[in-house]
Image 1 (cartoon, rainbow, N blue to C red):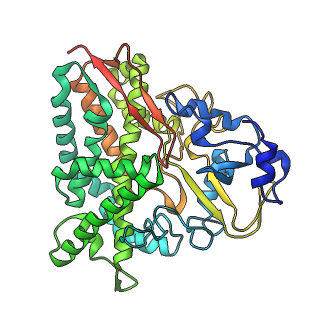
Image 2: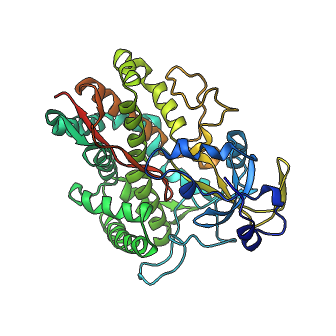
Length: 417
């Protein structure tokens, strides 16, 4: 990270000390095609908290790096808010545009308690550990079906063959949506989270919004036993949820269900393909799989987070002003050497792996139990049914640090069929 005085003078507020100004962006500062997490470790080569003129989508923001500080921010929504209404519009979800779809934001992600809690109570029963356990037979059957489709080929592009269709199929079944729409959903999700232009993002938003609105009206007219119907007919504070609230809930589950597990699987399988000894360790001792998942999620946390400061406050010696935007270094937090000894090393026997892959506090990921179950089943079935796999010679994985979710975009695997 290096300072840029000209940029700092143009885009840095007066209350920011010059010695805390550093030019850094998770997307621009990390190797987008190689290993973004290891490249972004440079975030620790400087102050624990700094201000970057390009930190948030090319714009200015504070950056907080250390895991203990991030956990503190997550657990204090009164001071560090997810609700941008009073500060700025989220371009994709809250700003009116010319699509005709209307105006909404992700529910309950962009709300703080107590409103956040009210919406969360609607879906808590659906994502309880007991309910997720009931889904396991269907999840495992989907996993086996996808493995069987490629097992005899001796190779596959893992993202397209498995990492994307596996969680998408589970999500569509949970929502009660047709599996034949899988290709459309994947294309829309790509446009929403990994768009190369605002035009592409708006087009994806329009297509997704039109389809989900149709689902909402259908489920209100004829409810079914699925998550789409539950959300469309829910109540908050004794009243039916509005169209805007339902669309916010739908979009939240759409984005979370179609992308985060895919991205996590990409980084996990890339690491196992890179390090055959780790892969063999799990084959020899499957009891290590649960802790291996936590260790890999620690090293490869994928979701971007940010917060708005609601009041002037001193935070670990740094003065924040009301309205300041804070980028949370969640993606690299699991590589904090103050929290984890030798953080670059993957150790499946590491103890107390308290990472932030699912955030913390009231906004902790509601789908964490399902995500862990999907990843666990994927590893169990792959390591049981597939020979040892490795990166295809002459090819290489590709990854991206752009957008709200870091992802492996290309993972060529081969094995001895």
